[in-house]
Image 1 (tube, rainbow, N blue to C red):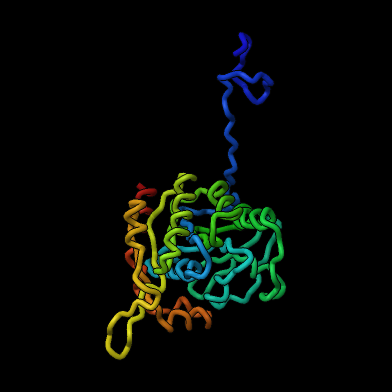
Image 2: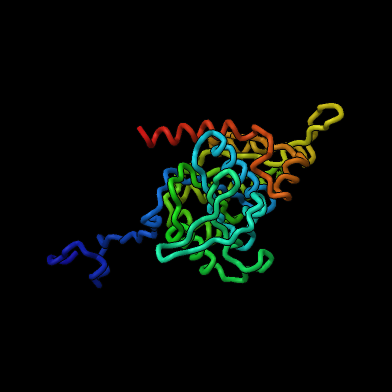
Length: 282
């Protein structure tokens, strides 16, 4: 260290042993007119496990419990949230920013499909542009009086999850999985990424866990025995819920009627989130 060291390493060319690494802050503030209390990320290690379904059902669950909820659809190349809610209206902007679309029951949604001319138009963008778009959904959209925002993230551990974890103040994540043994390895990757990024993991949700036969009332493990308990024990996590294979769930999504779906599978998660909300208000 030089005798004239001023402790400002960024302006110094000396390569000394006491040089301090300068941490870069990637965090972004939401729009100045936004009000968001809690942000919950919904992640998965791979696609096709029902992450968007769980995101939608959680928003509906908390909405039914009396909270103002919102969904930031960060799955830019595979947006499915608007369809699940039957939302066809396009988002509009003003000199102040963009405004999310409200569903039938008042859930606020922002998705790339609400900005595209046609819902079927593909988003053929490179990773940095997609990640930048997600960041704009946070900074340029006016989210009004939101108690719980759920971020539906694309599968894997790529650009978008990294951008969300670095840029947005995420209060916790929920990891969605399915029973197949292969998934356990992939889920572990998602869990480890969250641990590296110091993001609290609320717990795990297993989708397509079983099929309850309407004729005899028995449960059948269509995809084999579950491994979610092993994953939870390995990472000291809670199993929050197990969703069945139920035709009425997929039918509700296909018809844009997820808000009318009758089911209490995620109510235990609602109680956990309710306690989280109480912790902030104390």
